[in-house]
Length: 217
Image 1 (spheres, helix red, strand yellow):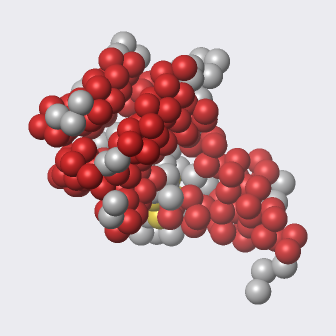
Image 2 (cartoon, helix red, strand yellow):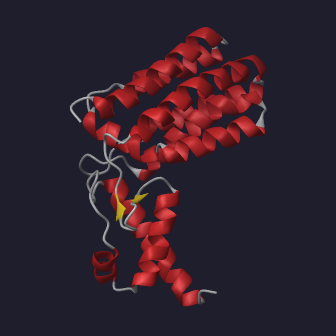
Image 3 (tube, one colour):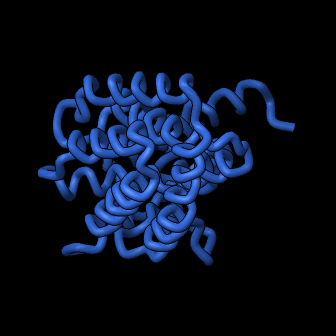
């Protein structure tokens, strides 16, 4: 069993590495060499490897056949597979949410959209802020949680985590995209109880994110 000190160090390295990949400090497809990371963070190889395994579990890195590690590439098929899954499942869940959601659901959607629309999307530079990313997640989760089905919501949670890196890359590659208008349309159509329009808006929203990774990759 790992000592408390080792677990604490691994936790710290995990968070630093995760944040670095999210910020783009490690470019798409770049190797993540344990020896270099150990020197950079001043820890042992065992600590770094433990942190890397967790990052792989988050979908932010790949474990290669020769036991090395690397950041996923823009061209990685997983992004399109995740998008296909989301475009198949989330509009259906949104339809259920529109049909079943009560007044409390409407209030949650309005509050989540207000928070998202008032949160600056970018930190200094071109990277999405942590505050905006969390507000974005809460808004999309709120849209769907009126469905009343915890299994479907758990599926959404897993897909959201798996697509976080692609979402951040897409934001960097399409800076002119009007996220405010897209999210406003999602809120308006959902709260108008127009399930067809809401599902169509969500499908288009997800498609634009995937397209940003395939254009000029």
